[in-house]
Length: 96
Image 1 (cartoon, rainbow, N blue to C red):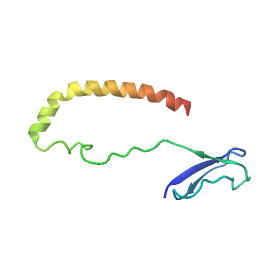
Image 2: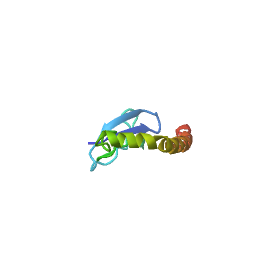
Image 3: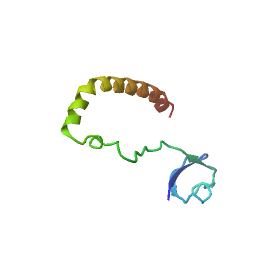
Image 4: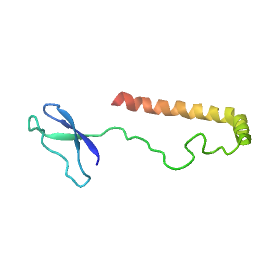
């Protein structure tokens, strides 16, 4: 069952509630009986399947030698993509 986070709009009381998907959202603060709002946070990323671990794509030592010769080219593109992703995530972190 998922855990939801709520915050009161009047007294700013924050708490978590474990609810079923079929349960309706809470609307009343347990401390002051004010109106609640549901808080939304970042969703964790889950990688399922094969290919996400270092050992998944390597079956022999010859393939690791071949991958090491191509590593500089791929590391350059990875650093470029990580730079652009860190740039795009920085404003989102500041906005929160």
